[in-house]
Amino acid sequence: MPPVRLALAALLATSLLATAARAHESPAAEMVTAANRFLNTLDDDARAKAHFEWDSELRTYWHFVPDFAVKPDDQVKTKGKRYGLTIGEMSPQQRLFARTLLNSALSHTGQQQVATIQALEKVLYDIEKRDIRDPELYYVSIFGNPSTEKTWAWRFEGHHLSVNVTLVDGKKYSVTPSFFGTNPHVVKDGPLKGTKVLAAEEDLARELVQSLSAEQRAKAVIPGEAYADILTKENREADESLFQPAKGITFEELDEKQQAMLAKLVDAYVEKYRPEIVADVQTTESTAPAKGTRFAWMGDLKAGGHYYRVITGDWLFEYDCTQNDANHVHAVWRRFDGDFGEDLLAKHYEAAHSNGDEKSR
Image 1 (cartoon, rainbow, N blue to C red):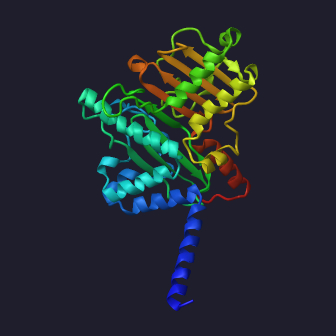
Image 2: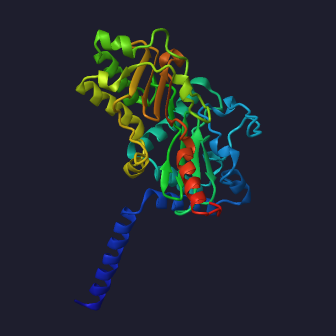
Image 3: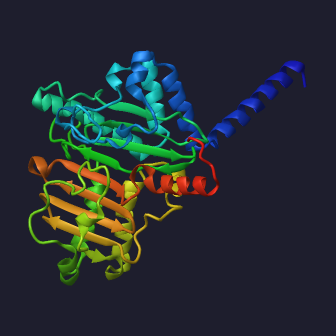
């Protein structure tokens, strides 16, 4: 083979190997790359807004309401505002790296939902004509130093979105609280007419409750009007006592077809994230419904305002659609005593202490 062709063949082989290596790079490594490239493009002022110490109290200070509705928190001495660098403040280059960081955690479904939820801010602006509705009013915050060995975290957040990713020892994932909301739930007019971002989260639950027999419904349906919002709201910890005494129908009281429906419903929340991340999250406890899992519903069975929740082990999936004439959804995936990686961090500290390792993260 002529030297030129040999050189081209070698170059092609090297390129293919590099592509294969990238294809097998872990999400954690991709997050580190994206986060560091993002941080490296920031000037001092922008970095001061986007980058925080790992132990900052702001790490667990999360919100899903619009900026004007964020309330002061005495625990972290805030002034009632979000912290981070907004998309609107970023250069085009910084926006690309910020989106790359976000997408390093999300599946294609999750990416599409995030983009559409942001786009709905323009729909709200067209309805309300208020500048508080802005698709670029979403914040990126990084806590600690991105590393494949050390513990750090990041958040992408704005109205109706809060994606919180914690990496313990640079490789163990926590992705709760994970909040995806939508207003309007179903777009009534304009170029996005008919758009329904969280269709599966509603349709699967409604299909399940409608499939129940009268005897099953007596267990699953909580009497009264649906709650005005999810019970855990923006609490920094998901308090299990809010759901005591336990209500709802248990997994073992469902038939096989209904059990499959419930599993599919849970997947609608979990599969917003990349399969590798979901697999790692489930090494501590599976999210799959099993014996003892409870499904509870409140509100209209066919249309109109409704609320439901699924509690499976330490996992909570909570959904509410009552506001704006039942066209406004709040949906969240949380872990009792484990949001922001607290369960993983407890194990990390325990292991470090037992090994006599008092080094910083």
